[in-house]
Length: 65
Image (cartoon, rainbow, N blue to C red; front, side, top):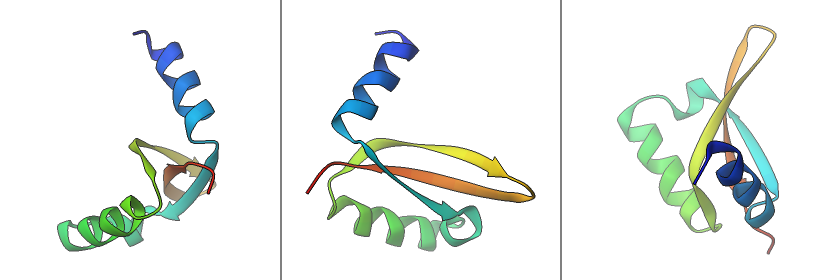
């Protein structure tokens, strides 16, 4: 599977994107807490990151409820 095919599939199956400040997700304890919560919301198996101005974010993809 190519990267573009995978991205298209992820966007189709998980159309809702939620960005959290990377500082809120950083660290093992925070990361595990966020991941456990996200899993209750049918989150995609992958995340991606983005930068807006001086802030970094981790983006979770969620399916429709």
